[in-house]
Image (cartoon, rainbow, N blue to C red):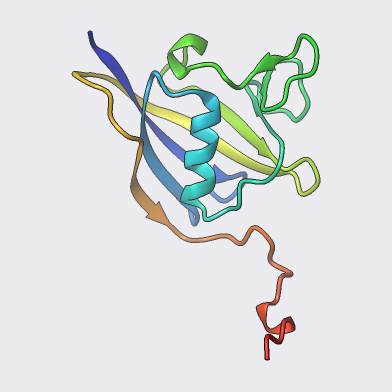
Length: 141
């Protein structure tokens, strides 16, 4: 059975030239797993709610939720199931307090022989999840 491999470029909205990650992820991975990969790639802590906005707008109807209430679509759905196509752009809206927006572009889809663990193939620049956090404020002595 053939699997799809999705190549994606992910960047904080508006920062695509100076901060981004290129990843490869298997089509049977869920959106929840994609979120984990993205947060890990940018060294974010995974401790907030999120949604994938297929029309790139926060809180839209066309979204998959990490914690669906009622009839909202769940992010526990595979990339293959949502039918992503090459060139498609969608957004990870992470942390409904700080409102991080990560733009995700599907750059390539190829068929591969077997499952694989998602991986980062290129990384440029860094961002801080909590830029106001100053580690010197804590004196452990």
